[in-house]
Length: 291
Image 1 (cartoon, rainbow, N blue to C red):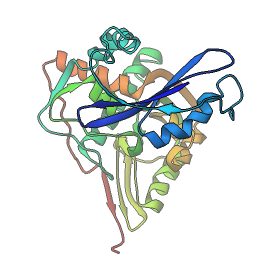
Image 2: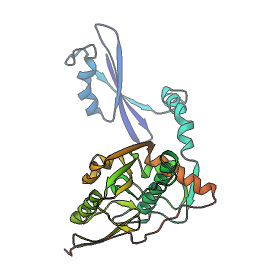
Image 3: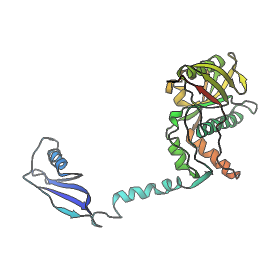
Image 4: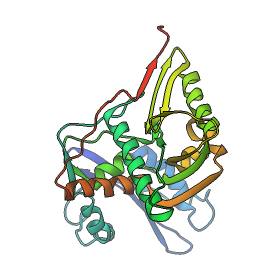
């Protein structure tokens, strides 16, 4: 016997509930869908839950309107138990970790949020190198992709949830040893496609697909020098066509995700009584052909 019921809450959000009892086993199965047509399409599948998906072991379908009330919306249900299990950790993401006086956005070739990301990576790289390699070892540049910055930072209160929304991917921070000729290759590739990624420690100018100016750590690129580059594992693998990083002679995995580094940085700013601030400073200028 199959019973199909239309669940109604007010005048909208109707669903079809159906329950079947198998003749041969007495077992029951239930499902909910949004309309009667879908329910009738699903009935043959439900009928075969014993293994035969083409079984048609039912005589008729009956349906009626059922008002949605506490009988159906039970606060002690399993869904509530699952939600309650994760509620403390989710709620903690909504606690303030810092603040801004303006919305920070991220658009190529440079913007306030992308510059902030590049500068945070560079500062983290310097700290990590001092703690793990030597106090006199510094990061020369940082690079992450604009595609990995998925939202703006809101004006006002900033929460961990905001940062996770901005950097949702599991991108780990890597520190590379990269020969100067490959740093130049990276910048020339940016020029060819007239698009750069978010960077720190770099200033460049691209004019009609030509790299006309570029400095790293305040100096022109030295092809034979080994540069310390702070980046993410996604780009190290050639993501977003950033292939030059694959030539790194050494790659150290810091074990930290981009979002966690940014959250820690904002917490430090707050502890110092500072807000999140960032500027467009002309670090990346791209002049394109007029269409």
